[in-house]
Picture 1 (cartoon, rainbow, N blue to C red):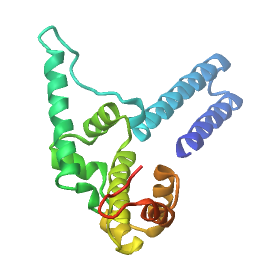
Picture 2 (cartoon, helix red, strand yellow):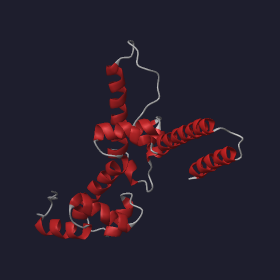
Picture 3 (tube, rainbow, N blue to C red):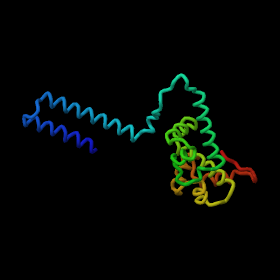
Picture 4 (cartoon, helix red, strand yellow):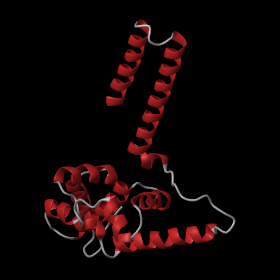
Length: 195
């Protein structure tokens, strides 16, 4: 917004110089064109900064013939296994307010690399991945125990009952209380039934 105001002020100043006879019409047109090009550059660089993750651009040295693509994929696969371990065994998803930056820090990689790997290998964005683990655990607990739904919501990592209910319904197709009632009614003693 400030850049747009600056652009209009610069063009207005050029118009005043033209009217005052201090600059010729062709020079005014040239200067106005240069200012507009600078404005376009400013807008585009701002878009890249704000929406960096959407462009998935890595500013790294160009690949050379000595770069081994199998090694790159092997490194990514190791990171994928570490992510799986953190989620399945350490249950990192239970941390309320878990961020992509926190995951990247635990993995010792950049946030952009963590995002790229999660998107590519899990076919989900970070929030979808974390929420799927949270909802899966909640499903098992809703059927297997009588703990209050609110307690389960907070223990699996949601920071509000509202977000838990919304995400659970998106992923399971029913609310947590409906899910519990449906599966408890159809469950045989000692055998959890999840669909």
